[in-house]
Length: 387
Image 1 (spheres, rainbow, N blue to C red):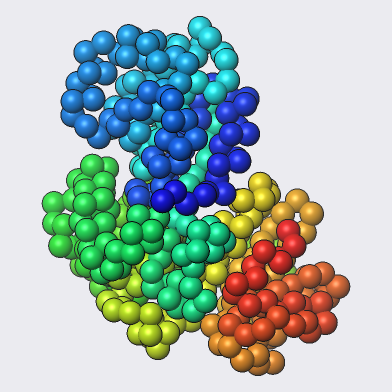
Image 2 (cartoon, rainbow, N blue to C red):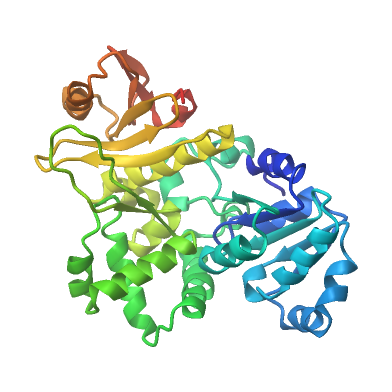
């Protein structure tokens, strides 16, 4: 069963103009399946395989030149020196749409591609499945906490693998192994403790010193580990929004997980009902909605940036979407019942920015309605956010 991906149109569009297409994203997010579906006749090689790497190392010029009309290279960060030979092939023949490179470690792949294939490559990140993609494949659930608990990795969803089994293997097989390839981590149990504690801070402002003290390492080590998880598409850093409102701002970022299924696993949540009753229920819902909004905006091909806003007196906005045309505040509440208290952050924002007549949104678990210029949207209707 193949699940149609929103990324397809963006990859095909970019390949009409660039010789090289770089597809990145977390392991198991569906990169390989998508590549092979779009280009079934192309030669495919996975550089995780020692045999494949040995073949490429033996004669890299022939390896590249013999597949110049369509070559798919998976996990290319395992052999970055091959990029120089691809560069040479591209410089001899600048036809568009000839190479597709895939990788799950942006910290390695991004640096090497940017240095070697500058001006020759286009990029696209494959995220875990969106609610829209799951809905189209008849795999979505109407209960938001079921969606949060299951997560969006295609293999787990289409094969209905129990989340505890899937994420236990995922953490050991991919996350920890990839981290050790990038960072020299001698005590893996300490890193796992760090991930568990980091999960408990999802949706919160990152306090590196506090987290470091709880783990038993230095703040610098914590920063380095978070950077590796961000580069491996495991976490999403949301920066604070600054503007000249005459207030003191929170300057540290918030942290979210790219997949809420993995987040639930790290929190020890055993089922969807437990997720709905968990003390981090609101954080889970917020994490899920923010990543869904990002997927929707990327599907549209919009140019945007995401932030949160908080000043020292506690006034805050969960999500600020900034585009070339407008800046939209969005509050996110897990409750299914509207409360006037939901409007507090929006009203403060409007007064501080003078944007009383601009659109704003509250995402929650209840039915859609309007309150002045603020639109209340159910979590299933995020497509209605007009950006």
